[in-house]
Length: 281
Image (cartoon, rainbow, N blue to C red; front, top):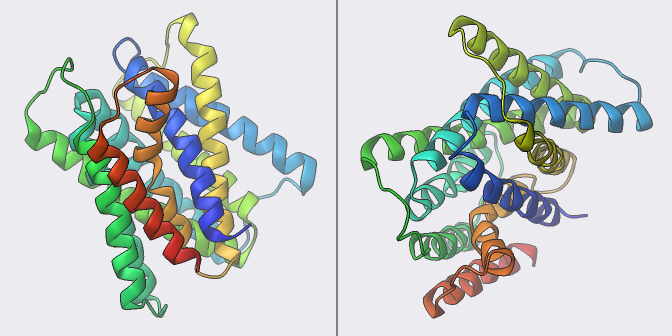
């Protein structure tokens, strides 16, 4: 599968994941939700790794890159969860979904040649996703102060861009399975430390456990898909196409929850996929 295909698979998984966040965030403590998502994602990762390769930590430089990726992933996830808790989606999704700009910048800094056509395609994707999210029907949602929401969304976007760049580099040096495992172990360990320091419990209601386990599996598949692109040509395109998660969240809400989609939103969908199509050429 190409880097773009892996990114789209990740976007679909994160789209389903984020639909769940939108509703669980109203009744479940966010750090508790993230704890169960990271834990179940790690279990999924260990099962896959144990069935296909040897259980070990990444070697040499890949170990430290994976640990750094885990730190960035926790920061990105906390920013995502708290930004979606505050909302609205029309504000949060376009900002977080703009992380491909940072991903392209990081790729250029490490020597990857980025063409003007690729830059235009990425801008089209971000614009298309932004239009779909900005016009989302969230009229019934509370709208708290925008400043903190914007800051959380920007932090999340930067965190995801660093997660993918560091993780893909680690996967290229060693193995995507081992790199993803170490990324998740680091994020989970830091979250546990944060819960201990703040004397917070990760407990969630019994009814939320199964959805959180499913979310963890989806998150595990998505992260593995993006980091797996580290061994492919143009790995940064996996980060770009995975940013379609915001668009998929709203499309899935239209399909599963019967939320309204307007004509301009469908136009945004077409523009975003045109950008993906250009990158795939």
